[in-house]
Amino acid sequence: MVLAGIGAGLAVIGAGIGIGKIGGSAMDGMARQPEAAGKIQTAMIIAAALIEGVALFAVVVALIAK
Amino acid sequence: MTLLKRFRSLLAISLLCVSVSTFAEGHEQPAHETVQHEGVQSHEGAHASTEEKEFNASDLINSHIGDSHEFHIFDWGGHPVSFYLPVILWTNNGLAVFSSEAFHHDNTGHHVVEKNGQKFVRYNEVIYYADQFESTNKEDVSAFNFDIRPLDFSITKNVFSLFLSVIILFGLFSVVGKSYKKNQFAPKGLAGFLEPLVTFVRDDIAIPNIGIKKYERYMPYLLTVFFFIWVNNLIGLIPFFPFSSNLTGSIFFTFVMALITFIVTSFSGNKNYWGHIFAPPVPKALYPIMVPVEIIGILTKPFALMIRLFANITAGHIIILSLISLIFIFRTVAVAPISGAFVLFMSVLELLVAALQAYVFTLLTALFIGQAVEEHDHH
Image 1 (cartoon, rainbow over the protein chains, first blue to last red):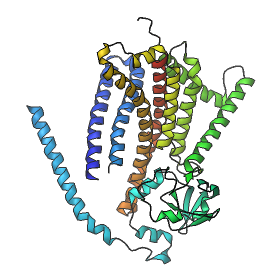
Image 2: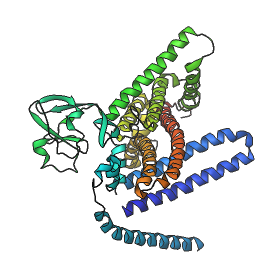
Image 3: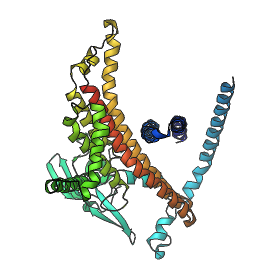
Image 4: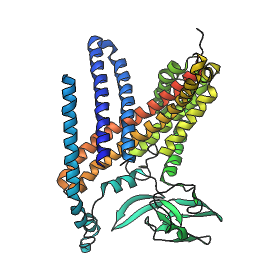
């Protein structure tokens, strides 16, 4: 149970870094080109969803291995 | 150097966390055993007695995200009220069909049901032959132990939900289809709501990924995948009968969806696609490495699709159920407003995730098909 918790926590660190980077870059992009904000937002959400998926792989492994 | 220092402090913190949590676990153990006064205050009604039982959040969550042979609606006076679904078993003596009411809500393997001269028991939603049940290993729930358990073709909660979503989609789109026959002008009503979604799948998913020449063949499949997953995600979020099943959070469902995508991709693959897999443009000496890697590559894509949908939806359900469980873990109604607010927030987020995962599944399916049908003019 404890190891599963650590695993889930490590996955969250990775996903946090990834989503944070995407969010930051998207903000940069939107500040530079406000007219492209809509497109950037869509791409950002897709990329965030993909990263979330990877983080959830780890959650599934943690759930199975508990 | 600073990075190394930071990493070291991170390691130290995590080690500290490990030791603290193991310590805490060691001390919680005796406390668990003492909390067992079942049904002492039965005169105060069912609520009092259920509250006195030790609350096990993980059991509750597992039973809610899993499949079941009956649709549990609510408890009334301490008795569960359910919608009973048919149990269909292929036994060693042929077919056995009966209502899941026969099990009387028993999931512990005690209540024996006799049908066609055979006896069945149910343990954790798995049906076994009663005479084999005592000797079986309860951890092994493989469906292919024909001596121990019959093949289970029951209309379970998930299958019921599958039929329900098919009926909803069929009704919805036949109404829309008819309205286009009558109305030659701009779409109205339901068609006006669904047409932007259909054109979204066409213009933003199919055409950019598959290409303007070939996208039309795959539109029926992409639209089916999109609306089917979306409707099932939404059905999973509605918390009352006849919805509330966790179909898209079932690994078997997502496995079949991903398998169909794999089959469609493989059958639409042209000679460029297969050429890149079995005869990649690298020196012949590298083939023993490259060909297995490429073969694994075509299998991991649908595998990732399967896990992504399953994990996203299941995780959403687990989070919502955990937040509700907090009320029962702390045993006070004071937590309810906070937990309720978080549940509301998560539910709204899940509405986004429901649409997003349907979109991502469709997008990646279109992407894989696009890779398979791609022409390489520049070679």
